[in-house]
Image (tube, rainbow, N blue to C red; front, top):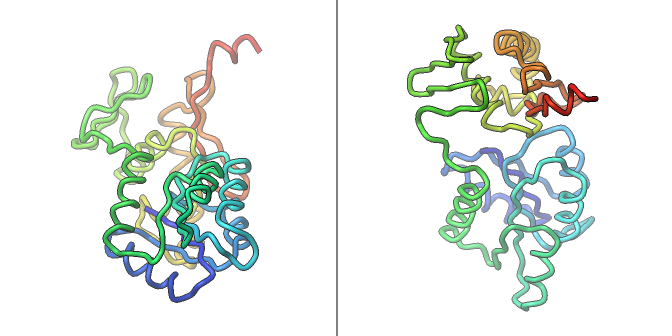
Length: 238
C-alpha cells in the first residue's frame, strides 16, 4: 500500500517510515501540506498519516481540504499531542478516520494503520469475484465475460483485476505501474508509460469496457485511469 506521511518534523517522519516500511508499505514523506496537496491531485495514495501541527497548515485543515476536494475517500490517521476531548472531536469532525496521540509507539501505530486498511480495503476472496458480466477466478488467472473465457496476458489480467477491485477510484499511472509491474523509480515509470497505455487499450478492447456494456474505462488527464460503473438505462434515456 502507498502511504503519504505529512509531518514537519524530519525525525518523526523518519521514525514513522521506519515503522511502516517493514510492514510492506511504500511511504512517501512530506513536510508541507501544500506539497502533499499538489501530489494528491495527480497521484494515488491508500492512506494519509497527518501530523496536527504543520509549517503551513494543520492536520484538521488538511483533512477538511481532502474530504471536500478529493474524489476518493482516502482513509486518514491524524497524529496529535493533544489529549483534550474537544481536540479529538475536532480532528474526527474534520474528516480523520482515527487519531493517535504522540509520542508515537511503534506497535500502536502499526496496529492502527492495519485496522484502517482493513476497514477501507476489504480483503478480496481468493476466488470467484464477479462484477456484472465479468467473472474473475484469481487463483486460476481466469476471466470470463458472459460465461466465455477472455484471453489476456498475465499483466493484462492483473491490470483488469486491479481496476475492477478499485471501481470508481482514480489510479495514477505510477500506482498502476508499481502494483502490476513492480516499478517504483521515476525513470522506469516514465520509460514504461507507453507500455501501460498499450495494456490499458487492450484490456478496454478485450473486455468491451464502454458505457453500453455497463462499465467505462476512462483516462483521467494528468493522473491515470478510472474504471466506472455506468447506469446503462439512464444513459440510453439521455
